Image: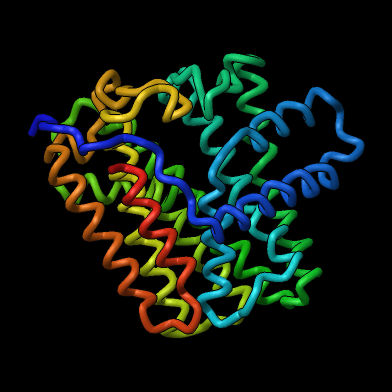
Length: 310
């Protein structure tokens, strides 16, 4: 079905003040983590990593990790949990670098600046992306020691993140996304792509926060369910924004999904149905954590995800 009409507004929805404060702390911690990790590295390696990671962003995934910790009754996140949260942002940054490559989505802009492959060349972009995944694992190992999580829980954090980033998650979903260009998919096939390329890392972020707080059993399952539902909503809203927001608002070219003949929710079901579906999924995410002791930040993030597309 062709996209029908846009939402009433495409203005950016501002982060709630409490989440903005978390984002600012994540930004500061990212700089500290990179200072530590890149000490002694050649400038040819360190500078592209900084460029790719420290560009302006909302830091949704690390904030979800921190919010998952709170919701699991972990209380206020300790300082070293912010270091742990940087691991998921590094994996996200790696995915953006590779998504922008000419062999992938071939985008020239990212976060309002030239994509890394445009600025420094494809080889530098490929190698920079390759640096970030092992660096994320190193940060988990270091944070696990700092937080006294123990070897078993630290290993599980590594497993959750690497599984979400790999063949059954983000990488596999991106491959299926490329293969589906120009195809007419049904809802289940499209959402299977979304569950891999977007929802897997979002769900992992929330689950990692819960694991760091000691969540097990039903409580951990509810956090994972929240992440899966929110991840689907997030990608659908991204599809809507690609059609309705300006290049300035997106920080990258608009209508790229149309140019690439991507299978998207608005392209297959129309903008109104896409907006309805994203709102339903966000509500289901909120419902999943409704009984947890301190889930207010998770609920605020779910509202932010759908409101940014209105």
